[in-house]
Length: 539
View (spheres, rainbow, N blue to C red):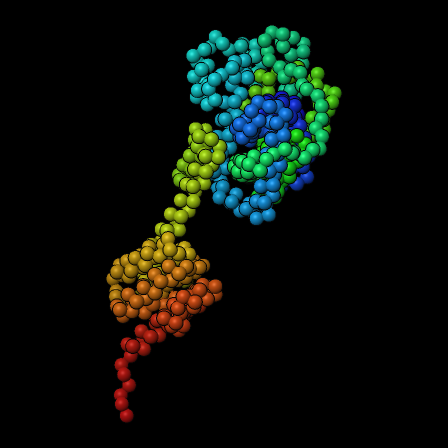
């Protein structure tokens, strides 16, 4: 893990617009603090591309090429991002993560995996590719096959083949760690670094120190706060998506509010230790997962190794080929694409598969936050559509089966003549009030025998709003005008109190509320039989 994250973090430091050594400094507080505070045993938190790019875009106009100003601004921005996350954790905003359904998680990880693979193609081919998309990079390779550096590509393919073979034959072996050692040995013995194979190279030295960012004007602070809110939103989305995806694969659960708190802590730590805003790294988490990490002990060990690298181990890591790094990332990315889950969703419900594919496409062709936002919006629309047009049922007797059941589900099921028991399988609110009224009236019209009693089975109606209450009053008026009794059965206590406050109980009459369906049927039968008896002769 350290062999991978050291060069990666150096690159992210440069990407964030600060000296590369700050990228290594920005991994130290997250490795330590998240291991102590985070709720995921596998998540790797620290510098990553999205927050690095957002940091550079935020501080570049203010720093104007001044390196010292850029480091001060990036530290202050990290501190503000951490404070925003603390406020979110205090406000218990982690519930927003509940909008991330299983198809979104599966599709998100597939999209991230493809982005990871696209980011390594240039490394494993020894080329500088202009395109950032996977199709664009493949097209560049096809157009310029002569630019591929053969020794680099062969080394990368050899490392990837080694990893896949170890995974298949010895799944418990630390394949990526063995690949790191093997690649360093090949470079050292074959002098591959002198034959055009790129290596990590010299690593700067030094350790960060505790310092409070200073020197920002009120106007600058206002600008940074607005940027910090956006970075915190992007960082938390990435953090909780990655954590939940691996939690789902590993069979454990994470605490969304705890993740907000942990993300706040690591960013405050970076703000005080000359770092910059950070979030989770899908690639490092995937590598840890591939190695078999099941606790944050891997982060604590990586923390010690990074310290050792900064102090004494720089020459050893300098020989590590970047092509082997690319192969390790591709290997980890391939493990994130869960083809089995895509197939399972296709068998279960096509709409779930479409949502996963839309998430994957959104992550690939827009950006991560936009893609996830699109998928969440579609999930909410789908949920709202189910609420507006839920299942309903006319209930009747089934031969040789106790109780009352949906007559559409059973052959030979019949309703009780004159009695219509109707079930609506959703809470009643403004979104479905008209749908409820029209479908209830349609069910009455569909009965062959004129309906005398309409009994609403309220077992699925857990609450009601004022719009739906008015709709129910309107339905009662329509039924009363037709001489039809409107009654309710299986009304929960909370719903009953809402109906009292809405005036429905007074309008309908408390005697028309029945605790169970059998009591409603018995009351109807008794009244029907009483009405059918001939009158007694007068004295």
